[in-house]
Amino acid sequence: MATMTITPTSHITPDNDIVTLEIFIAAPRERIFQAITDPEQAAQWWGRKDQYYFNHFNMDVRVGGKWSTTGMSPKNGALAVHGEFLEVDPPRRLAYSWSSSWMPAVTKVLWELDSQSNGTLVRLTHSGFAGDANQVQGHSHGWSLLFTWLQAFAEKGELGDFRS
Image (tube, rainbow, N blue to C red; front, side):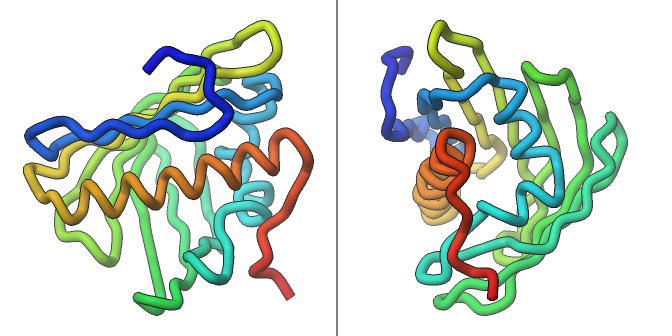
């Protein structure tokens, strides 16, 4: 998984507990960390109308701070996710709990941003699916989409198509 790829790579553990994704983004890790922790920036790129989107974010980015977001999905309707920041080490690492409106389990998301010569290797580990194959596969797909949106935003300033 350590290859320099400009498209997301995803791996699900055999026990369906963890999904990991990686992508290379031609932008400094400080830019990427800001894009994922600044509520105003996250609301600009996190989604597309035809897939799903989150456009209202609240974030108290400190260990123990709370975060939440809401959005929509054409398939599932209203979406909501919330949690607590577990680790904040700008611009290297960010971890938080993930409790969503569509999944009963509380899981953990870890972002790792590794500076490379021309940008950043972004690795996301989402754990705690406890063998729920449908949820881990669905999140693998969702995070893969998100990685392409984050890449387009960080590299080219592209915004989501869900704003009026």
